[in-house]
Image (cartoon, rainbow, N blue to C red; front, side):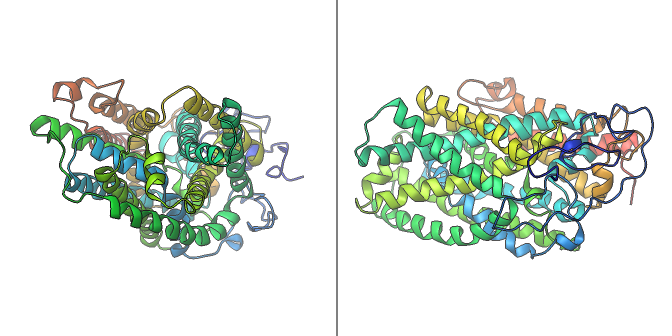
Amino acid sequence: MRPTDSTPAPRSADDSGPGSGPVLGAGPGPGAGAGPGSDGPAPAPTPTPTSTPTPRVGGPEARGIDLVPDEERGGRPRDLFAVWAAPNVSYLSFVVGAALVLMGLTLPQALGVVLAGNLVWICTGVVAAAGPAAGTSGSVVSRAVYGVRGNRAVVVVTGWLIAAAYLALNWSAASVAGIGLAARLGLPASPAVDAAVICVIAAGTLLIAIFGYGLIVRLYAGLSVALTVVFAVVTGYVLAAADLSYAPAEPLRGAALVAALGAGFTLVASAPLSYTNSPDLARYLPRDSSPVAVAGWTALGAYLPSVVFTAVGALAATGLDMTDPEAALEGVLPGWFVPVFVVAVVVNTMTNNGMTAYSAGLSVQSVGVRIARIPAVLVIGVLGTAMTLYAILVFDFLTSVSTVLQLVVVVTGPVTAVAMTDLVLRRNRYSGPELLAQRRGGPFWYHGGVHWAGVLALATGGLTAALWVRTTFWTGPIAAATGGVDLSVPAGMSVAAAVYWAATRALGTIPRP
């Protein structure tokens, strides 16, 4: 049985499959000279065998984090448009857009924040360009940034904890709607019914992640169209109820306005910054795919629906009580259409979280856990489901949304900035076999398996972002001193990028072209 099917296979010195944990950091194993714990250099890595079938809809994807050979690649960069559009035709966008108006912004101010914050999708697109070049997942590519060993700590946070938090956040959004539909169908209101709805939604999502890349690419093209049609109908009813002359009872001015604009920008930008996994969806494209095309189609596919439906959420808040988004939107829809809308919300959540769980499963393999991709998906799914149950049954949904989205940028902003800087410095010249190799003396072993330039850049960028962030339970000292102005995204990203550039130049760890 292949190691990427259901059980790990024994590792050899050159093993770059799931058993060797190559995505973000590799774990030591019994291989002779292949892992961090070996006594000496291992032989030069050899390409991964090409016996794994090309991803298809008919069965679960067999390939894990191993190298995608050229003969198994195909498609065009423009295929990425639908892949990124489907998860971003989103109910959560309505919620985020409404939150901007609820913060006290006027409609023009909120729309300006929507347009500006979503430009960060360009960063997601740039990072995705590494996928075809390396032929492996983004968490493997980041070994170039943090080193074979240093990468493990990063993936535990970005690939596990934050991924599980986003799974819970999106499942919470869908579950609120699903629980409401269950009540309409006559099911009793009880924690047991709520838990059952959450588990059904989670199970459907994990099926997408298990079937993997082939299903995502083919299914999402149709779903992006279907979801757009449903959400366009919702938009029509929202526009009919919107008050285009809306003005806050007490308009924000001065420092208060700047603080609200900063917090709103962080809230909107947090979505694109969460997709540090974007190379995972591009790694099956031909090696010679245009990096500009990969970046452009990825960014455009996510940007357009995000802008449209976040703006609709802001419009909704001018005429509806969006403190309860589900009740507000269902209140303006005809009764027969409400179940259609709820199903669309659930399907959208599955498309969004399907991508997240798919990449998170790859990340589990990356830290040296001897587990195949599908069981890894189930592990991260269980963690996300548990967090969702807590968020719905114990915590307040809107508070969960605001807190999580604003706080995670402390990590995801610097991670994205460093990844982009590394890609530019290397001119996107990544060698998949070298990235997957786990050997002392390799190009990504650096000093003791750690690339201190990357670690320093991430730490300083994260610290800077934490000093500037403002959430409901934590306000950084600089943000507090400036009247609550949240500049965590630009501050954290710019410092991380600058430190990484300077440190790699000083240490000479990235050869000049």
